[in-house]
Amino acid sequence: MLQSASNATLMHERSFLAYHSPDKFEDFSAMMYRDNLPVAVFPAHREDQIVHSHKGLSYGGLIHKPCSFNQKLAMFKSLLRHFESLGIDSLQIKETPSFYNSRPDEAITYLMHLLQAKTIQMELSLAIKLPMQVRHKGRKANLKQAASINLEIREARRPDEFWDELLLPNLTKRYQTKPTHSKQEMAFLMKNFPKNIRQFNVYKENSLIAGATIYFTANCLHTQYLASNEQGRNLHALDALVKYLCENQAGKRKYFDFGHSNENSGTTINPSLFRWKESFGTSSFIHSHYLVPVSAWHKLDKVLISSR
Image (tube, rainbow, N blue to C red; front, side, top):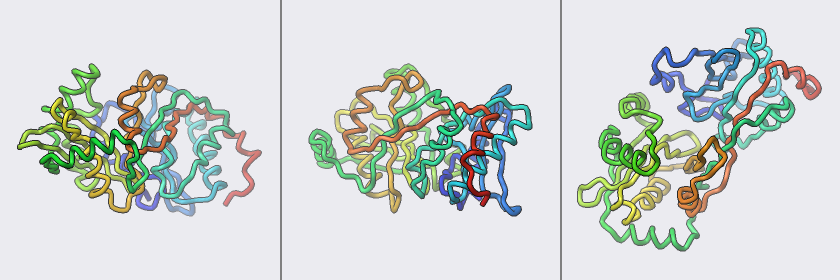
């Protein structure tokens, strides 16, 4: 079903969620069928009386095959009634950003309005519309400078070198945090998704100075992790890597997704990180988190005009 869904990515594969320990989440996923054929999936887990569209994923919601608005409305109504019948109070949904959709579609935002869902969190994601066109004078100068230096970009089969030498030290020193995934978890994911999760490193005279862990989806390249050391920053190695990925790895994909630069549950923005991403000519996209009472399904009866 996922292969033909218009808004599915590798994150919605059951094998992707397998990197979590079995006791971490109480799975409460749901599948929807029409004429005995699967048409949608809602990856989810349960915490007391709330069902979350999975906290183990960066985004989720109702993942579905291409369909009409009425069909989507009917599916969401059925989903809410299903969870209500199981004694659930509400759904917490991290909606998949719209640019991941192979068919532009923001109908879920409208459905959330109809259901009077509460927006409990919001981030501002930045993505480059491909092909990349950099107009920022400073970024153009940095890219030109990086191109004049003998930098070497290599793809690595494992994340170890990047994790140990760049990512962990960088996050600890600059942000006092750790990556969402451990090195072992990322190695597991790379092994299971060799075409979709790939590691690219930048070297200067065989010394690692920058790198990126990239998720490849049908419509996007997503920078799961980016890091550089002081030498890499001075040589604008990440600038060169972003340019290389956009021009040499994107293929027919439409976006290069930097993700958000928000902190404090989306209420503040890391200004230097945001400006760096924005200087590549990005567009802004909303990533909304909703809380939906399952009993609100009846509000959709006034809108539903067709069952097909």
